[in-house]
Image (cartoon, rainbow, N blue to C red; front, side, top):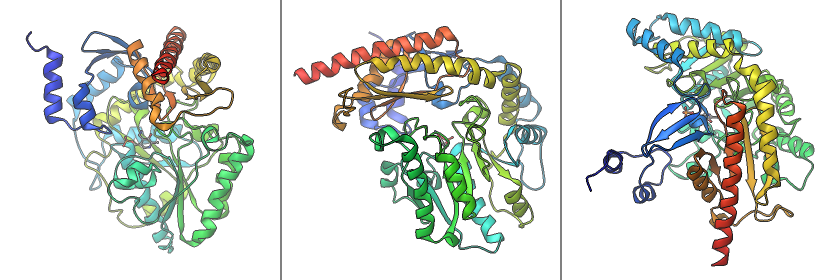
Length: 457
Ligand code: PMP
């Protein structure tokens, strides 16, 4: 039989393409999945299968695939000015307009924007900015940045160091100096025998103990995702964030919110900082800013830090693609669509609560130890015993088995260990939520029978 188009692509891919976050040998043995097309909340693979994208790509395609407004904005900007930089006292209309639009949407006094090409670049920018800020203020010894175990802040050296993923630290001698971690507010994983509120406060107070152990005069900033995404959609107990903010204020430690996933409506608010009542000094965004149609990130900077930066001489930092005009034009169009269609309000008042209600119905499945969610983020914990919440031994691979069954059902759901997570496009309809939950239930049934067969062997 002649080689199909898909097989030819798989062969080229296996020979020449090194994939991100992938075990190369395992992939070559299995063959890559080829995704060819997207429309709305659906993807089509090279075999013609239609797949409901329960992850909105990588938490980013908030408006779904094939939005004409975004395509036309890119097309028009490519014709007008496909590239120019923002160095050397220059701006261009898409960057200037987008900065002003974002300043109008952001909470608190986050009135200033520094553009990057990605979330990782945002976090590298944060590290350089906060250290420069403190040096300019005559406190160069304030260098330490405190983050959390199992946080994800990107894959660059600073991003991976700020992140608390041990396997990432293990490759290449990370974290970089002066980046330290406290425990995460993961109630199901690390405190399910305790009262959630007390657990949240206890985890927040680790920050105070860490600041005191280091010496407050050495601590520059604390960084956290409002809801940890890649770590497993970990929603901190109420009381956690207000306590973190109180501690930061007490010791004059800058509060940095990494809203790369949570920004742009994911939680039913433009930014999750609003939901949690936070006034961060810096806020990182990417992904949903363009609905994933173009690579773009931005660090929003509050008045106090911005004033020091503006008056602090040249900040020796920037990227060729900082504020790329096509990306900024697409972001502007994306925000306009979100405003016109009231996407954020719909997540808050309609589709978010609907998804959470339907998702919670999976809690009666014998494999499920907990369901949780916020806005259009949700997770469920696979357990070996629903009564005791006993988890599977790690080598069982229950999460990966479930993920494969989801794919077979035509659903993208991600596995973080044995935590199954979703983050669908914000434009998903009620019927599509029903489809998602039905497919997830069917995948759970199949996972249960696969696991029972394994145990029977
Ligand atoms: N921060 C958070 C919270 C993220 O979820 C991610 C990506 N998943 C990043 C930073 C890194 O963003 P990027 O992949 O665009 O560099």
